[in-house]
Amino acid sequence: MKHTRIVVAHYGGPDALQVLEEECPEPKPGEVRVRVLAAGVALPDVLAREGVHPETPPVPFTPGWDLVGVADRLGAGVSGIEPGQIVAAMPISGAYAEFVCLPQLELVPVPSGLDPAEAVSLVLNYVTAYQMMHRSAKVGSGQRALIHGAAGGVGTALLQLGRLAGLRMYGTCSSRGASVVSGLGGIPIDYRHPDFVEEIHRLTGDGVDVVFDPIGGSHLWDSRKALRPGGKVVGYGLSTSLRGEGLTSSRPGRRQRFRGTAVFALYIAGGWLLPGRKRVIPYSIQTLKRLKPALFRQDLIALLDLLQQQKIKPLIAQRFPLAEARRAHELLGKGGVTGKIVLVCNGASPEPAAP
Ligand SMILES: NC(=O)c1ccc[n+]([C@@H]2O[C@H](COP(=O)([O-])OP(=O)(O)OC[C@H]3O[C@@H](n4cnc5c(N)ncnc54)[C@H](OP(=O)(O)O)[C@@H]3O)[C@@H](O)[C@H]2O)c1
Image (cartoon, rainbow, N blue to C red; front, side, top):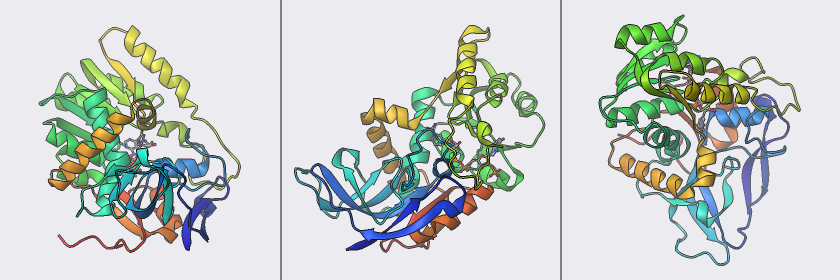
């Protein structure tokens, strides 16, 4: 049986994504073949396509951090899972395919009846948001939070989970995202505003308890200035280091590490050494999952439960058929996307379910 898989043939712009037709993979012992219904499209996929994300595999590779699908065929020795069970996984690469074989241990059961596109939005974005909020920052009700990139995939997840946690929230975004941020309970601050630190102090007096910062570089230090004493910056991305390195460029063959990593380490050390009890804490979903896989599983199950109870509602920016992965990357690369872009296949509807 043939299936479709998307391949990054060389590092570069969206045209590096190619559609491949090939034989379906067979599960090895301990593996389950998953028939993919939805695969998330995220900035880390774009960065891997460019060859600049720390998790970038060697070319050729299939991108795709996260997926939701149906257990389709069991490898030898697999038990405790039935064909037909809906599952979620975060393989980091490989999800842009109709069929993927994964170790059974990687699979998390998904309650039936959920929209696969909404469920897949939880895997990378909401687990990131949930773990930063409850495991790194350990927020408490009534605290103030500044969320950078608040209209984006992780940002909107932080806003929804922050509202459930009883936070008072401020969110930097472009003017296009302001209504989304206020609709989710945050006070929007235009990130092109010359000084968000000043704006935060004007709005709050002594600053916020926590800042979630995906921008990195010197931006982390500005975020620290927005804290009240005892506050924390959770740094989880280094987007700044990448601007100017040619996002959506077509220069082939580059494979660069974030230059901002060393700067990050300096800010973490500075947070401990300088007065004011203001700390900078790094967060990485893949590092935590590798060190403590049980926490990833536990947190994803908790989020799937919140989705089933309709306490959270991921924003789906757009659904594309799998073969249109290139268009999905072009859209994400342009910016201004609110919520999650999802690739759908194997009969999952490209239209949202009726409310
Ligand atoms: N450490 C981890 O475990 C982890 C996990 C997941 C994601 N990440 C990282 O988190 C970052 C965000 O991912 P995402 O999927 O949420 O991306 P996304 O959906 O593209 O959202 C990014 C948002 O940031 C906004 N933005 C751009 N420049 C900004 C600035 N200077 N200040 C404030 N907001 C700005 C963008 O607005 P406009 O488009 O309107 O300009 C966009 O809404 C990426 O760097 C990703 O690699 C890290």
